[in-house]
Picture 1 (cartoon, rainbow, N blue to C red):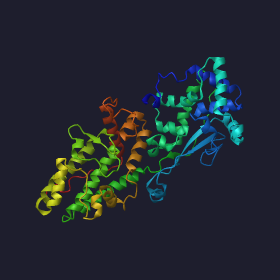
Picture 2 (cartoon, rainbow, N blue to C red):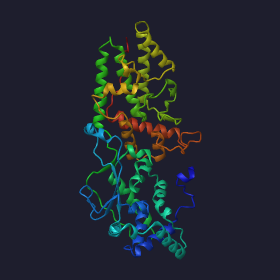
Picture 3 (cartoon, rainbow, N blue to C red):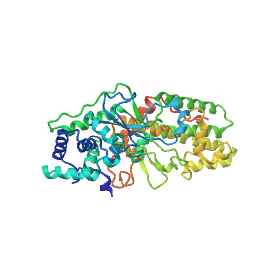
Picture 4 (cartoon, helix red, strand yellow):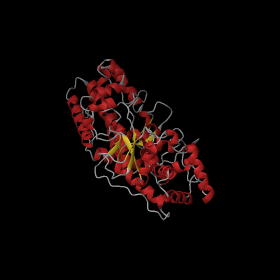
Length: 456
C-alpha cells in the first residue's frame, strides 16, 4: 500500500527521458490534432484526460485577474470550510483566491477549446487515446500510457523536493488530496516558476523549444484566506499581554489572572509548535521533556503522535508558567482548597497542564471555549490561525516537504516519520523550530511575559 501511494525513483512504471522525448516530438509534429493536444496537455500539467475535458472546470484564455496574453488557464475551486465566518475576519487576513490555476501552453489552447465545444460522444475517450499510444509504442519502442503520462509531473515534483501542495495546485487536485492545501497561501508566480522549471526539463534534449510562460505583474495568491497579516499577529500578542498586566493588578481575582496568563502562555506555545486547538491542548506536563526541549503532541484524536522541538523562547515562557503555578499553589492552599488541588494536579502530571479555573460557570468545563471567550473580542480569528500562518511560512521558506508534513502532522497513515523507523532527524526538528521562532516571536516582536506573581 505504501509503495502504491508514493512515487519511487526505481519504480518500473516511471517514464524514461527517451519516452518523454518521443512523446513530445510526435505531438509537436501536428499540435492541432486532438490526440496530440490532450496528451501534451496531460504531460505538461499532470492532469488526467477526464479533467482536461471536464466541462465543470472553468477554462478560459485570459481573465482580468490573470492577464495571460492568450494562454489558457484552468481554475480549480478549492472551497474552504466555514466560508461564512470569513467576512468577520477579513481585516485580519491577506486576500487570496480559493482556487488553483494551471497554465496551458498557448500552442494547445485553441485545440482544447475546440474539443470542449464538441458533443460528449464526439470527444476522444481514454480508450481511443490508449490505442493511439499503443501505435506510438510499437513504432518507437516506448512505454507510454495515460497513467504514466499523467503521473510524470508528480514524479518530477518528488524528485526535486516540491511539496504536494504545489503539485496539487497545478494539477487540479481537490482540497482533500492533501491536508496542507487547506492551510497554505502561495503566490501564483511560485506556481508559474515551478511550471517553467518542469517544462524546461521536459523539453531538454528534444530539439523543440518549450512553451513560453508569461510574467504576472500583479501579486496574486491562491489558497488559504485565513493567513493573518503579520502586523495583526504582533498587535494581538501585545494587546493580550496588556490584558494580563491589568489582571495582575487585581490580586483578589487570582482565578482570572491564572486564566489570562495560562491562555497567553498557551498561545505562545501553539504559535511555536503548530498545535491544533483541541480541548486537551498539550496534555499533562509529562508530555514535555524539559531536559531536551522536545514535546510530544497528540492533537488528532487518534493514536497519531509527533515530537517537535520547543525553541528556547518557548521553553522560557513554559518555565515562567510553571513557576507561576508553584507560587499560585501557595496562595490558594488555604484560601481556595479546590483550586489548590487543581494546580497541584497540573504540576504533578495528574491533570492537563493548560486548563482554566474559569469563572464558576458552564464554560469552565470546556477549556477550548474558555480560550475563545478570553480573547474573542480582541482577535476574532479561528483558533487554528497559527497553523495557516506556519504552513505558509514553511512553504515559502522551501523547507523539505517531508519535514513540513511531519511538523504540521499532515502525513497520511502510511507515512512512517512518526514511527520507530523515522528518517526525520533531531537536527532537522531543531532547525525548523529555530526558524519559526525567528519568523514569529523575534521578527513580530511578540513579548514574553514573566511570572505575574514573581516576588510575592
